[in-house]
Length: 59
Image 1: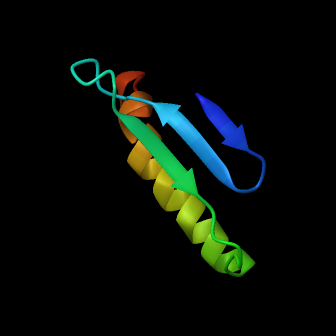
Image 2: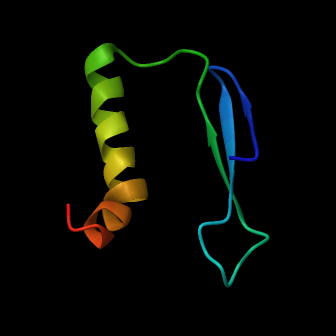
């Protein structure tokens, strides 16, 4: 993680060694969705961002 603004934004460095200057930015909108939607979004982001890492450890 390169930087963050609590409750608003996260900036990550590149996930790809061949593209070290890429950045991944997640910004939270001012009016967040309800708890059920937030749970769904968190689960989906977890799958998108971390599934391959878990699989590499056999989980």
